[in-house]
Length: 75
Image (cartoon, rainbow, N blue to C red; front, top):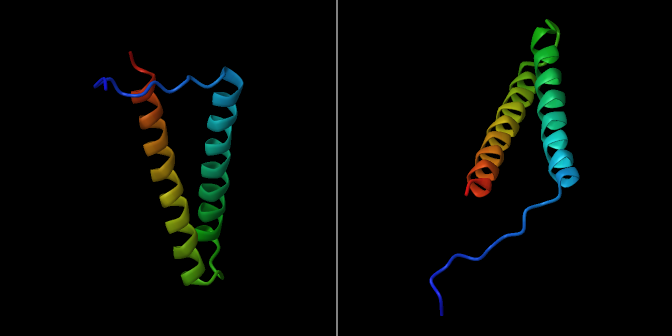
């Protein structure tokens, strides 16, 4: 048994582009809707907070994914 870590194949550029585009769309939609909802004076404060939390969680997940992809791609 060798001590070498398993080698993961590098995804094709179009797969990588689709993954990045998906994360960007998720973050933009969640952040935009949370921002618009926070600016609405008549909106329910509970819903405002919920959308803000969802947007923050998606941004954190996107950053963790992006950092892990960068670490895996380094030689």
